[in-house]
Length: 183
Image (cartoon, rainbow, N blue to C red):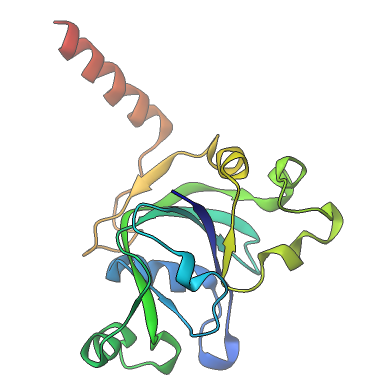
């Protein structure tokens, strides 16, 4: 199993001003589109773990997923369905997503850059998050995900439809489960 960063950036010329919009759309589809020249496209395998980086204005790691498929060529009918009538979302290749999680509290790159081995020049870290799909060493994956509380998204619902789980609710539910197991 490998770990990856999928990078989402704004495309104002194509009507996408917030990279979060891209992640939300793709999470609803349980699919991530890839281009022919996307770095590492052929190395993506089912079971791999990925973190989603949101470019400007966020500059943060904000979500995670497990790849439910290897990279594959998208059929013409799937290409139409998954494009939602927009050229921006039309992709020749892609991967299926599972266990999609949008984090309640994104992890700002500045907060973890010192612990990330794949970023050699800590002052110019932005260049390391360009190019669509980046390999991520397991140790770096753990450094990023160490302090985030993910929320699970339904494939039919948007991330802002009441799926946020506060740390208090999470702790209470965990405590209740332990109590029920013991009693």
